[in-house]
Length: 129
Image 1 (cartoon, rainbow, N blue to C red):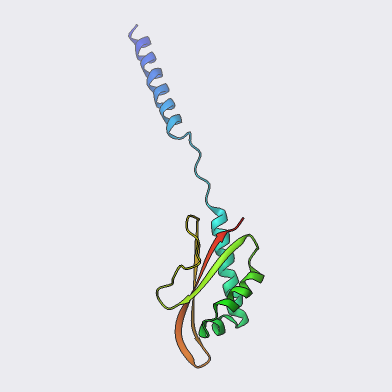
Image 2: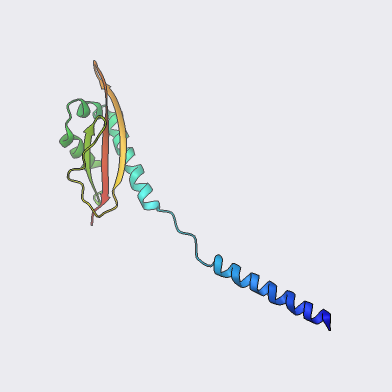
């Protein structure tokens, strides 16, 4: 008779462990934010392309954000809205909307022709609908 009670006790314990494990692991893992990383990679690739063409250093040395943004409009997909800032250390966030997920890409440029100063191009990107 004692053997039956011990067997029932083991079955109840095993089923309690199984049920508790089901509750702990029943939620699916969160899927990665793949879209955000793709947008960030596209922004970096666009800045690198402009730099490889030799235009980015010129825009940075002249602090010509408008020409840089015009060239980025041709490269980035149309559903991505963006704003650029050329700065040394602190970049302002003017013209950047609040209340949205903002993706930031920093690209550092050092010198143009005989000038060897460094500056940072900060690209703010967000999804436009």
